[in-house]
Length: 327
Image (cartoon, rainbow, N blue to C red; front, side, top):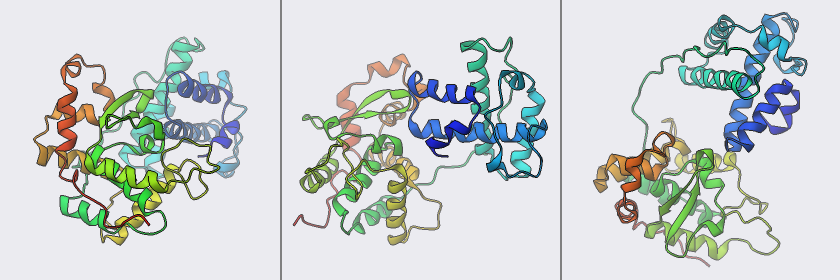
């Protein structure tokens, strides 16, 4: 879903999206996901309650007329019927349906607790579909080295630096594209803005420092107003989608395609390599990765910054160097 499509959503959903971005600090990618899930839900509601003809294409349904009176008529059973529709008609996975449940629950909680428009939250007890647990996919050390070795082309320094950060620091896609070059500190650290606008400091190992140095030597400066670390071919902040396309291209080139690998799997790879090869404590690893549910836990305030630096340096890719020279 695109941001310019927000005006076609129910007005209260539009207000909610503004709230979670401005007040709750959700990233743009997260806001777009909430918008898409709520749009799907209300398109279903519009047809289920006869607000739109059944034969009208979903993309043509007008949702702007859905007001608080209509929303008050939505029951818990309606939500469960929607989840059945998502499973049977849309063929959504358990994870996709679970994400929709979260979007619905939080939206109705906003109407109830923040705006006081509902006396009680009908979605308070909306259960999440059970998700089958599976081991995360990741690259081995040898595969990671192979991926780095195939990077070339016009944007090789940029691409090498991006993939090096993914593999060594385990950052999220949204975190990488949001980095400004002044987030890199002179003491060899990088300030990352994670979920909920929470900042954390990551120590850059030598591979990261070398890759970033190579990129900054060739990064365009003239006429570039954006402070983004990584730029597109138009000298604007690189988009998440372009990063995905770039990573997938090199995965294919390295002979690693067709395995369900993705940008997020590079995050899994970094965590796995640090844990397997660096004897990194699990709690320390969670701090490095910036897991939300552990950010406020008191025990993590006692983890020293020196230990964090040693954990990043323990990544076996920390000494990996590019095979090309700047011209």
